[in-house]
Structures are given as C-alpha cells and as structure tokens.
Amino acid sequence: MSEYIKVEVAYATPALQKIVVVKVPLGTSVFDAACESGIEQFFPEIDFDSIDMGIFGKVVKKPKDQKIREGERVELYRPLIIDPKQARLNRAAK
Image 1 (cartoon, one colour):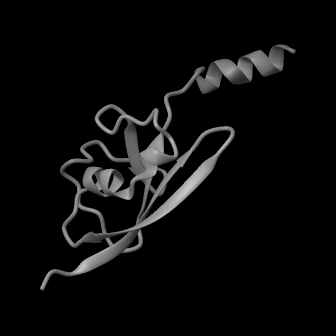
Image 2 (spheres, rainbow, N blue to C red):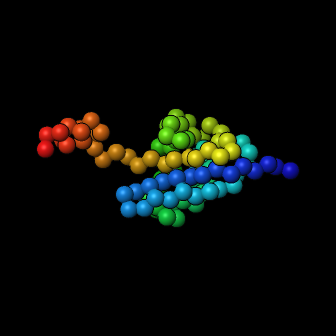
Image 3 (cartoon, rainbow, N blue to C red):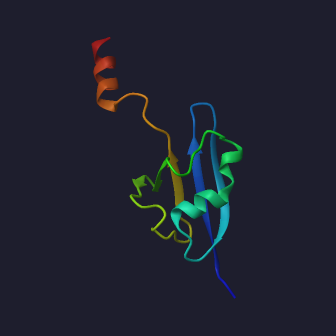
C-alpha cells in the first residue's frame, strides 16, 4: 500500500493568484507534484520544463530530483520583467 501526502502548488499573476492542494505519492519530486496539480488549467502560459520552482520562497535548483514532503508548498515563479535594483533606481529617480 503506497502512502500519499498533501502538498500545495502556487502560482500568481498580477490579476489572479491560485493555490492548488494536491495529494501525491510519497517520494514524488517537486516537478512531478507541480505537473500533477493541474494548475496549468488556470494559467495556460505555464511551461513546467522552463519555469523556475521553489519551496516556501527558496528556489529549487533541480526540481526533477528533489523530493517533496508533507505540507510543503511548491511555488512557480514568473520571469522578472525588470531587475529589482533597476526598478528601485527608477522609482528613486521620480
């Protein structure tokens, strides 16, 4: 009998934020948990092979290799539009 764990998968745009709770087998990778979540139904622009992933704000370097644990939240990160340092400089210049 295989054991299952509950994890969350989160993604946000300026217009919509979504957290999906998913039940996956113990030993599932971060990547597979994200794929199993079905979150791409809400955000069709998500490409799991190229998107950065993290757990509770810490980037996961190898999401296909790292195993997820009970209660963790996989976060999918959009690419930055502008470098944060440049954005601060632009705001300060105004």
